[in-house]
Image (cartoon, rainbow, N blue to C red; front, side, top):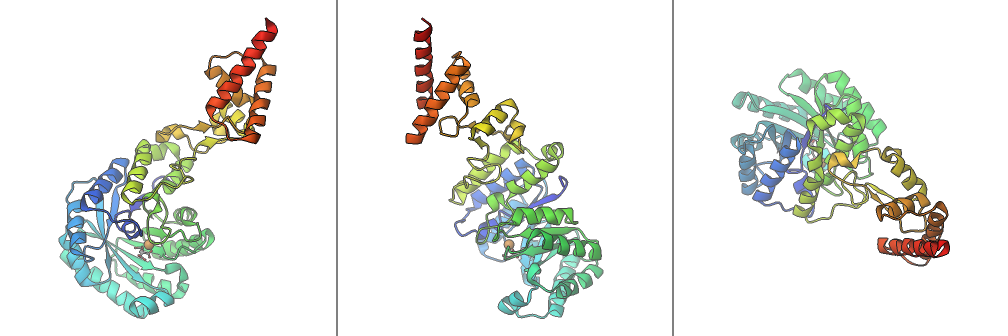
Length: 383
Ligand code: HCA
Ligand code: CU
């Protein structure tokens, strides 16, 4: 799992996020930050989209980044030609295959999809033999399997493509279906496969995982999952999956401690907040509250943590001042304050914290004050 290639599309799908309006400088900054983190494959918006899209693609392609910059393009020779002129190292062709999108978007039959994809690929191969070519079907998971295979199998025969993509464009596929379809594509074509999954029903990370365990070699991500609607597989979600499966392998490939900063910066540039419960980088991703949890976490954080925050340059938070607290957590606080309290005093302080917290929200100062009170009473008693 940890050797899957991350193809980050923050600079293409992410630009399609409703609030994103990245400046040229911001795009370069994001490209550099992704590269510093360890991403070696970046996808950018079609250079045919606008004049600035073309200039930005050119600037990113010539920025000396380690790895490949790919331009997303429609299956059109003109778009491909414009993209090639920017100096990108790869073209990511895309065309809709499902009946509903074929009708609503390009109106072409399956045989036409094959013909157009082949024509563009031949054109690119002739003009730029070293540029790698990926073909992807948009809305593949709402497409009858026979149609889908009637696109991929003839294209595979042509030996023009370096990789196939497959997109869950409406984000409604479930992991079992992704496993089936990607598995079939993998077995029938023996091609490297890239999965692109939207998150409309919340399965984008699980679907990416299912794709990889069924033969996908490449996963499309964007920072924070930025993309159309509620987005796609988030980079940090995919990294968490890889890390959970293979910590050492993932740490060897990525500068994990750069991930929170990368996410914060991209959130800032996209003018959104990092969601509080985002995998890995959300504000509460390493917060512990209930007494049963905090006790075990003090003994061994792995008790309630699948991911070690320290590996990502993060720290855990253990909440003490609430009605679910436990005396172990209160003891740790007392220790931190240099107080030596007897067990009975600790239990008394804990009872008072719970009682006070039933009435109002407490701060750590409130907890400290209760501890000081109990300590003072205890000293008076023994004097
Ligand atoms: C879109 C296109 C796409 C393409 C994915 C791909 C999708 O709808 O904007 O290139 O594989 O989700 O189908 O992002
Ligand atoms: Cu998409």
